Image (cartoon, helix red, strand yellow):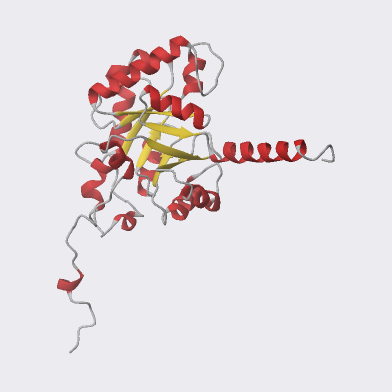
Length: 278
């Protein structure tokens, strides 16, 4: 009698290099270059698709301050999947449920806000890594996007990035201890909150000498450990300056900011050249 089930020998797939998930951010860093990162505040698969075609190396869905939730994050990931960008997420907080869930949903990197101590950094890594390094629960529901079933768990601890945010005076006081936590791939500077914690006006492209010295220290300490500092910038000029200072990942504004900036520029130019008619 004919067995309708497929021949098991033909369906078992051995892991090859093509089956393994590959993280473009890691590849760029390994090549000694800088990652140019996009930022999604708008909860739209279409806008994510547009951003993914603009030349970014990675694109981060912002679930902390952006208008994003888990469903919109998945839609953004699905829209970007056809394009060569690494999907990342800034989670709203250092909490195991959401960290595991965004990784299950397809995030290659997790940026976590307000990491102020070694203990908080340790918890972040534990939430993001499978045993034995961490306590992440197994259930990568979109793992098939990475290759054959079952291979994701073999490479996830190595390929997914834990990036704590350094954005307070307390975090700077504990900087070396945070950077020494095994499993940290890099850090991400939040210039607005960092300045705020030092009694300064919140802004992105900081020029205060005391903050610049902090940036220099962060870059130096990251370099010592072979990990990678990133920073949020207000535009191309700020990103270029950050690269000159040694940062290895630069975020250029966010999608809503880029939209508003372009619209304002074109409207102003139209009115300027209208001869007073507009």
